[in-house]
Length: 246
Image (cartoon, rainbow, N blue to C red; front, top):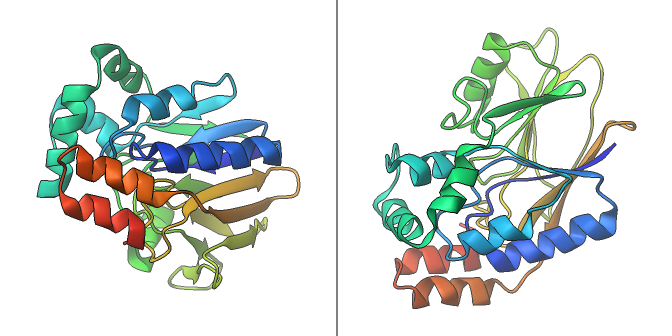
């Protein structure tokens, strides 16, 4: 099975369209979305509609939870302002859809969630010590996550105290072959708001037969998405950061 795996679109329709086009052309048979379709950007409904496909599985993120409940756990002031805008502009029908999304999902021999298995909506798998906590507390071969907006892979190997890291290549991509005797946490980065210094959208393919995971960077017209945020009266920092990938 060839999976397309993406996360953290955050209402960025321009990035979402570019990534969807890439996945379709790549022949992805099933798409796994790992949470945070909404928040920050101004096209949440359009992004949900864009991926209203028979071959997609949605995982809930912390921004979906905030949109449903109105509770902004851990949100910055800018994120709160953007979520207030989203909750005001997203209909109850869409919020109902978000409430039906799963928090975790096991497929074949892997598992998926938004943040980390320790706390699927809120855990940041952002360091070797936090990855170790997840490896120590849960039994899994490999797990796909998002939430940090920073693509990287943590590897748990026998006879090593701490997980190792597979970092991005100079172009911002990743290529990892899943080995049977190692365990992995694979962070797929962000479609709509990367924070690794590369503003291009993150998009992943995983071939469960060959066990090859690849992360690609997809260019898109970020200036259009940025202008929409500014025109909506949202904080200028949110408009600026997607141009810089920070």
